[in-house]
Length: 135
Ligand SMILES: [Zn+2]
Image (cartoon, rainbow, N blue to C red; front, side):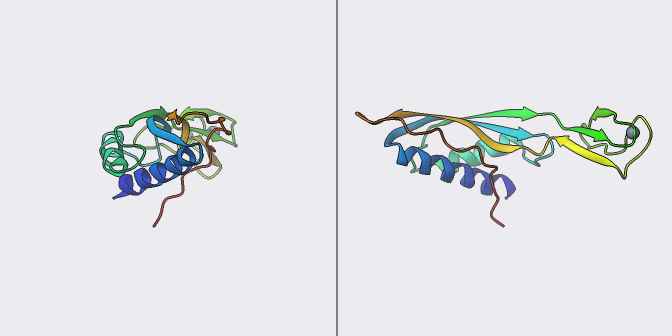
């Protein structure tokens, strides 16, 4: 299941960062999800809950922030909303060969909130590297 491997990757990354900080519990995770990332938010929320069980993230809230897909045509320099199903032919000039996807494939952790253990100095925030799926 696509969403399950993403949820596991998110939980793994967050737990690593939270553990390094001496966190006692993670309360929420904010995730940016592109329209074309192929993720069903409800399915991801369900898998996230499963993946959190028994970790520092148990009971944490997953907040997904959708990102609309936009494309750019290099022939006429037009931009348009790709939509769903994705339209990758330029509505301005009909060009499809020189089309660049600007946004829509995002899948990354934006922020994480956790409760600190006592007497800890806060280290840098978790990285914002894209999540790589395990295949
Ligand atoms: Zn065009």
